[in-house]
Length: 436
Ligand code: ZN
Image (cartoon, rainbow, N blue to C red; front, side, top):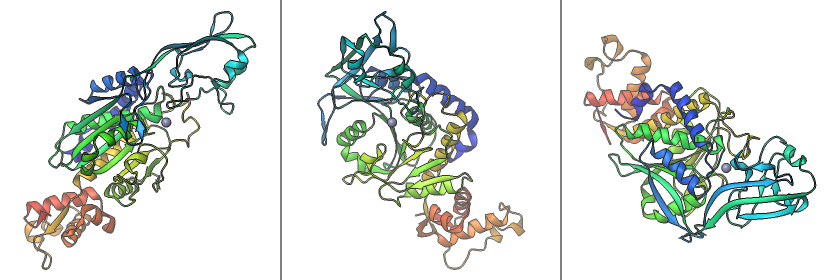
């Protein structure tokens, strides 16, 4: 069985529900770009797929960047003068500015306020804020909670540590017939946020689980890495392998109710760009295609000019364009099992087309072969059921000159990719076609 057969075998509705449940399992963990929350997340993933964990030590130079100190947190709170926790890390890990240095002091409300972050325009939501590369501490809270704070003294405690340690990268390599690779990468550094990016993580895990179980033409590489510094470190440590990456996708924001959006690779017309566009165009659902820009997720690093890899970014509503982005409202209610299911199904179609997209040579190229005598023409009651099937055979035969892939022929003929692939398989059986 290969990836294209998975589409027929899988129960997508069930997978949508399983994806949502898996996200629910990862949701409470306080992740960051380093630390035990990130490790625990990768350990949970290891319960589903055999990823390898790489520890990159603090201080490792990766191109122009340095792997930072490792951050861990046990507890954090702000207590009022009656000893009540008015901000409590145990209620939501978003309450702490991610990467806060340890602090234990009693300060006035005025001094405390210089370390508080809220969203007046969405007064019930807690913002998500980080300070990875500048030592700082702070708390995030809903604006309504901020307004409730009375004048007076507050006890502030962040029981965290920022010490030499390491950054953990998760990786799964699935060898195929060829050394050429397909790369699927997602960021694993966000704490309790669902669309950005537990949706991408969960879908990557489930894709890996199924692709692991089938025959593969390409080799497949799955990366579960912290945003920015994770991809920079992976590229720095694996530079010689990058020439094998022939197609790649960054997976993020795949559970919201928006339509699919694809951001092309920097190359703009790579095979992955064309296949994603083809699959979305023929899906029957609205979609958006955007050109590459040097802002966004880890495609920024994979598509930096020194690498310029064919890696695009697939999402539903892109980062920053839904109000819930980087707030406590990007929660388990915001993402929908039906949308996770839809994203998973479309990505599987894309990956299946990647695996199936081949170029053939017509072995009977001087005039058309006589299809009727081989049972390949409808009038003879053979395997070909419709005029469309016949057209697919004719398109494959005519354009299989070693120059046109199935994708080229699908784009030009407006015939279905899978129908063309099936036609090519039939022609190979009859000795009329060979893989180039
Ligand atoms: Zn984000």
